[in-house]
Length: 259
Image (cartoon, rainbow, N blue to C red; front, side, top):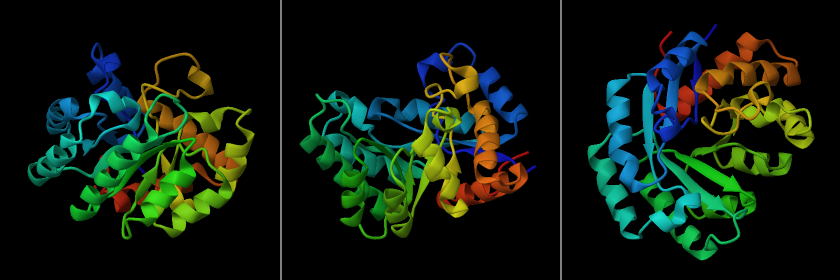
């Protein structure tokens, strides 16, 4: 079967410090050939760069996650611009908007999001977007930056929002939540989206699928997400694997994942 791409995994998270190499081995054994790792804040960029240098199947993205707003300074945007001049990246991320957490300043989120979208466009990189309770606001921001491409990770929006995103050149990341039978709307939406819009993701160590509920998630779990996605769509697992991997290769320009 085609090697899989985990399009969103936080391998640099401290929860992997005790067994990171074994986590990587389990992912490879499960057929994962490439892993995209988005940063969350500037102080972590160097460690992520070091991790990617050590492992050829780990690909870094750099950015400022909206949930960690208190950690970010406006000057970090200039730092990001300079960082991308000298460090290889497959995307700018994780960036975006979080309107679920009420005490996160929405205006400041928007300023940082817009700045990072501009930086991505200038560097001709796709973006990895966090959009929790904020898909419409994210779509509006993308429209202000024509030519931007990327993925809205852990997509939980409507079919209409997904269609708007696809027309704007955006894919959607599908992970553990789709394996829960109670996620009825998500499962209905995912079953009908164009295959060319779908990416597999784990969001590990968060968002485990139903088989690992309450446990630390790992990138190896995307094999289970793949099986669920294929079943929901009435497709062969091999076809979904081939198309989602091709989607990731095209978006992130990573070449053919390793076997």
